[in-house]
Each structure stands twice: as C-alpha cells, then as structure tokens.
Length: 548
Ligand code: DHE
Picture (cartoon, rainbow, N blue to C red):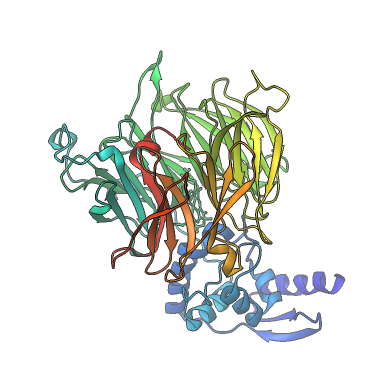
C-alpha cells in the first residue's frame, strides 16, 4: 500500500516536471522504469473521438471518474499498458463492456486507447451561445408544417427506435411493423422525447445534436436541428399548463455532458435562447467540480419548471422557465452521482438514482423539496422505472440495478400507505449471479413488469430478461434470446394499447422482438438490413403520457 502511494508520488512529480519517462509499480508492486508508449497526433485525435463517444459517459469527460473509475494518468500508468488493454478487451463484472471481445473496437484500437489513457486527458473545448447559434437550422418554419396528420396511420402508435451505431432513428408504424421513416440524427443517437401533444419527436445524439421530427408528414421529417454541446444525453420540452400560464411546447432543454451546461431552446424552432453553466460544488463534500454533467431531465406538471439532475455535484436543479430573463433555479441537495429516474404514478414525486451513493432521491415536485434519500442495492439504474399497484404495499416504484442482481420496490403513497412510503419494501432477486440490469418497464395493461440484464458479463444472462408478477413480486418467467439472434436484450416499451412488449436484440445487425406481455408468447420479430444496433424504444403515446 505504502509502495503504491510512493509510486503515485513519483508519477505525479514526473508529470509535473514534464518528464516522459515515468517510474511506476507493476501489479507485483516492484518498481520498474517505464517509458510512455508513443502516440502520434493523428492517433491522439482518433482516440479522443472514441473516448468521447464510448468512454466519457462512464469515466467522465475529464477522466475523473463517474459510474466508472477515474482514468487519470497516475492510475492508468500504475496499471500498465497490458492491464489497460485487458480491461478494454474483456470488460469487467462492474459493468464495463467488453469492447474488444465484442468486436466494437479492433485490437489496434484497443491498443491505441490504452496508450491514449496513459497520457494526460486533453482539455475539451467550450461551446457557448454564439457557437450553438451557428449550428441552428430551421428547415421548415412552424407555420409551413402540417396542421393535421397527412397519413391514415395512427401516429400516436409510432415507435421511435434508436439505431445507435447507424446514428439514425427508425420510426415504425405499429400496425404494419414497417418503418415510415429512417432519419439521420446525431452521432450515437441516445434518446427520444415527444412534445406535449405527440406531434413531434425530439432526438438527442451524444454529439449534442437535437433534431425535431414532425410526425404528421406522410413520411416523418426533420423540421429543425441544432447542436447544443459537444456531448449530451438528455432533452425535454416544457409541459406546464396551469395558473401561471400555458407553456406546453414553448421551450425545450438540452442537458449536456460537455461543456457542463444546459441549453434552453425555443420549443417549436429549436432557436437557442440561453446557456447555463452547471459548474459547482458537490453536496456533502463541498468539493469544486469542474465538469458536473447534466443527466435526466423531466418536465414538472406542478410548476413551469424542469427537474434537472446535475450529476457529479449531486444536486437536483429546479429550473423555472417562466421568465428566462430572470431565470430562477432552486438547487436541491440530493446525493452524487444523479443519473436517471422517473415519476411515481401520480407524477408528483420524481425518483432519481444517485448511483455513486447507492440511493434513490425523492423530490416533491409540488413543494419543490427533497422528501428523502433511500438506501438501495448497488448502482440503481431504473431508466424511467416501473410503477405498479401492489395489493399489500399499494403504489410502488421499482428500479433495476447495474451492480446487483435484483429489483427493489419503494412505497410511494404517503397518504394511504404511510407505513411503506419511501421505504424499500421488497427486494426481488433475479436468477443467476451479478447485476447488469439497465431498464425495467411496465404498462397498466399487463400483470407483469419486465427487467433486462444487458451489462451482465455472463452471455447466458445478458441474453435473458425476466417477468416479475406485480402482485406476488416474484420472477415468474425467463425470456431467452432465440438462438438465431446474436445480441443482448436491452430496453422495453409497449405499444399504445399495452398489448405488445417490444425489446431490442442489441447487435451490430440486430432485431426487435415483440412479445405478448401477458402470455409471454413471441408475436413478431422485426429484422432487416436497416435494423442496425437497435437500443432505446419510445412509443409516442407512452412517452407523451409518461406511462411506465
Ligand atoms: Fe443512456 C437514458 C446517460 C449509455 C440507452 N441515459 C439515459 C439518461 C441518461 C443516460 C442521463 C436519462 C435521460 C433522461 O431521462 O433525460 N447512458 C447514459 C450514459 O452516461 C451512459 C452510461 C454511457 C454513455 O456513454 O452514454 C449511457 N444508454 C447508454 C447505452 O449504452 C444504452 C443502453 C444504449 C444506447 O443507445 O445508448 C443507453 N439511456 C438509454 C435509454 C434511455 C437512456 C434507452 C431512456 C430510458 C427511458 O425509458 O426513458
């Protein structure tokens, strides 16, 4: 232990002195002289790109760590080139994907990334309002767009499917199970949200590009786009209508990973209006954080506000958009690192996963106050979560976990079930060892909730998902990936009627599997050359109405 500390000191002082030859201890703790493996300028640029696209999400833009460990040179040099290569190739049980083994990175790229990680992290550039403005494209002004659907299809039953590596979204008609449009959006497209009425999809790419898609055209079309930052994960619209006015669709917000900021846009044109930095001080420690990323955002129904998870500082910001000139932000102290989350069934309480603290934070959106922090198993990752009504415990919000093979359900009804409110009332063990779940979802029309196991390193388990009975809170069925499909199961959504459960076979050339959510029968499999790495799925009706 002492030796390791000394090694770090040697490394740090070598870096400070600008020396390239550094002294580190290998795994056996014996000191040895190491030279940094060379990295050309061109390789640095390529590695930077791969890092921002693939790694920054878990390890942080400045490599200071988030859900994944810090990858600062003191740590990576101590680990050594071969060990870093092994991690990148084979992943880890904590949830690191096997980038090499899964064929996502070539052995040459793995080696390049390992060398890149031994150098100090390059400083990412800023991106302010004038930069955002330069990227804004209004393709079709609002008054020239359709005023009613130009198709006989039920657009509220379209399913938007992220084709992640193709940087595209497929919009699939539920009736024909065929795409009505496949549109190029941002790089490594991440999620979709709808406007208040279900006329538009807003997409966000990891490159910070937002596309506004009008679904009322015969073939849905991008009518505006803007790049709000270099690196982003979330987008939302304004949804408040009440005493203080009707703000539905007036604004949109983009949550950025880099630069650490959020950007407010005009909801119908995407014209950039305001950029707000999230740099701040961490809850609990008071430590300065240079790069607090914006994670999940939801729109409040109680106030003209967005509820914004500011990840590393562990604060939930309530951003009041009523008066953008005199912008009010209420900073609620929760816990680091806030990631994803969703509403309880009444949409009054927002439950946010604080994944570095193994807690769920509960925010009361009516009173704009933190209710409590709830201890949970390791690395909660609910996606939006699942709301169920249990005969014994009443309304529950259930979450899945990256770090534990379990689902935990929390009581959410302080009025009628006060003895269970804001307590984990049930932990449901999943079959097999280890965690790796990313998403859990349900729908009022099924007796079950469904949970995936995408990041579990065991190939058998990551090709399974499970049905949990909402009444008994027991796993009642295991779904196995059909043998001819080679990927992993990830993410669920239902059709509008709740009679179909859609799940992705996440593979370079993947598929969409559709099951009956009550009989568990496989109803349909959507395949084709266009089904490239399908991941997130967003039914228009369910997304617009927060059904989960
Ligand atoms: Fe996501 C939601 C961040 C990797 C699919 N993901 C979210 C949210 C955040 C986030 C902050 C909540 C947005 C909101 O509600 O406003 N995701 C990150 C990462 O930082 C991370 C871990 C690493 C990265 O490099 O991006 C990451 N996410 C992934 C994937 O690899 C997934 C599985 C596949 C993909 O296409 O990228 C993935 N994330 C999703 C999906 C949602 C999501 C499908 C929306 C869930 C929902 O039901 O709303």
